[in-house]
Image 1 (tube, rainbow, N blue to C red):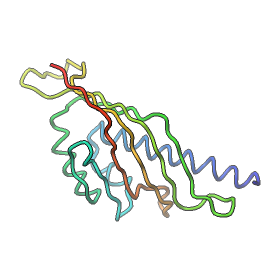
Image 2 (image 1 turned 90 degrees about the vertical axis):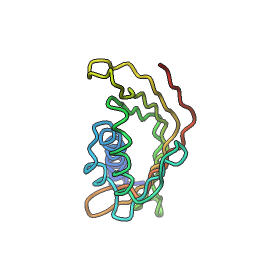
Image 3 (image 1 turned 90 degrees about the horizontal axis):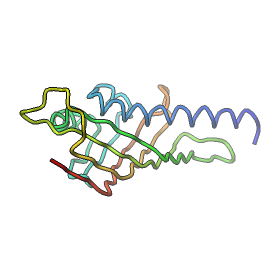
Image 4 (image 1 turned 45 degrees about the vertical axis):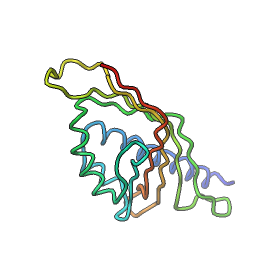
Length: 155
């Protein structure tokens, strides 16, 4: 592998990592336009393992915008990222897959919620599968699948 290919691979990995981090920030901040911008026009998201919907990213963003009103405080932690770049004869290709674990503590909204209590009373965890494609605008998501493994709800 040449230095040029090595550098391209490093740059791709950094760009892909930024998309995955951008995903978490968009969901946590309720930035649904930012969420949509992370996907290709045909991009899809699947939250069915967590009791949610599956469909085009724009429709899923609308659904998330309503659903996340139940959780005014949320924080995605996406860790153990395993990035697999398409290999085209020893050079990076135009597609990638990321498997990454997540821990997502959230605070349920309630009549007593005044914005000062931040202790989570709902925690979900599992693994994401992100599918990405290189586009003229950079790396974009073609698909996100949530594989929820467990959740905990406390009073």
